[in-house]
Amino acid sequence: MEGDEDRTGVYSIGAVAKMVDVPAQTLRSWEERYALIVPVRSAGGQRLYTRDHVEELRFVRDHLQSGLQPADAHRLLSERRRARENAADPTSGVVDNRDEADGAPLEILLAERDPYAAEFGEYFLRTEGYSTTIVLNGDDIAAVLADHPPDLLVLDLMISGGAGLAVCRQVRADGGSLPILAVSAVASGDAALDAGADAFLQKPVQPLQFVSTIRDLLGTSAFLRRSATVR
Image (cartoon, rainbow, N blue to C red; front, side, top):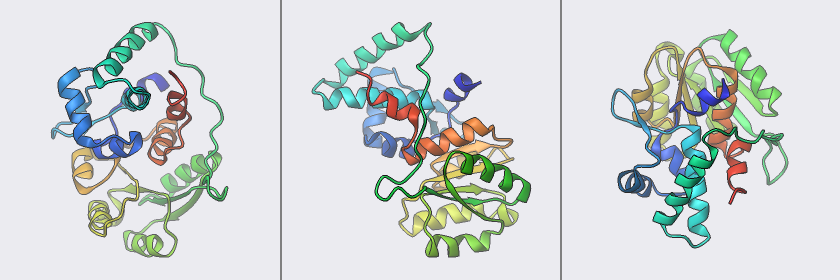
């Protein structure tokens, strides 16, 4: 169910810092001081934020921008939680997954070892309005990144016998800020985040969570855009 997926920790602290435009150190400080937005911890100790966490952090950030102090913004968040405890979130609207600059579809590079999983993922991404390029070999990823830089990389960590982690490290070593969603049939979230991935989903991936995670990492999620208008 969507509500359960909203409470699944998938985003690294670095990814969330970019998504909400708040430094990672500030996020840690808020966690320790107010103990209100507390990410789950992976087996390896990594902070993993949920979609609910991201929505609440944007709520706090927006109130800080309006002039409130952090303590007051967190107090309002606590009150908001209580008010919403037994209420469902409003239904999200249609998401326009196009680049705001030129109206072109956002580009997703889907690096998958399984051609059937690649076709499955491509179907849902294209249904959502994204332009998708598929590669089935780890050796081809660098060439595509250089020739046709995408807006986001979906990376199966087991591609080409497990080359995915090395790809993550190389992208980050090159100074790239490309959002990376790592996926794997193996529970390797800690390794993925350590290597530089922004989020991790374990296979089999649910289509709704797959698309929602990509929307969030790209900053085009109706879920997150809605929070920016709530005061």
